[in-house]
Amino acid sequence: MDANNIDANNMVLLRGSITSEPVVRDLPSGDVVTHLEVTTRVAGRATSVPVAVHDRPVTVGSGDEVVVTGHVSRRFFRSGGVTQSRTEVIAADVIKTTRRRTIERALQRFVAAATF
Image (cartoon, rainbow, N blue to C red; front, side, top):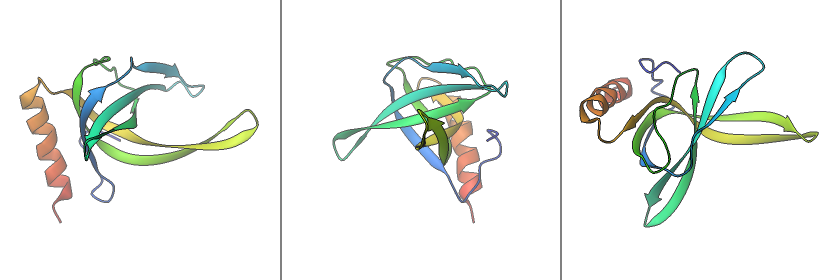
């Protein structure tokens, strides 16, 4: 999903901490996907959310506080001869919380996309 093209029917806004180092994978198609684990607090409990960043460099690491915008996706794949699935957030933006102006612009795009 392009950072400037957020779909109003499937929107995610997430704030949390990166809890492990990003994992970069080169796909057979030539695409590059970076997987992140973002941990949030919901009703006092930690919840881990898998986030995928497609074909863009990621400048965050373990321990960084981030804001993520994007959409939810469920993908299916074969592993060990078995079909499996994974639900994850496909990121449009992954921004360190220290970058206030960048977050404000991303949130403006997010709110504009949500306006009906």
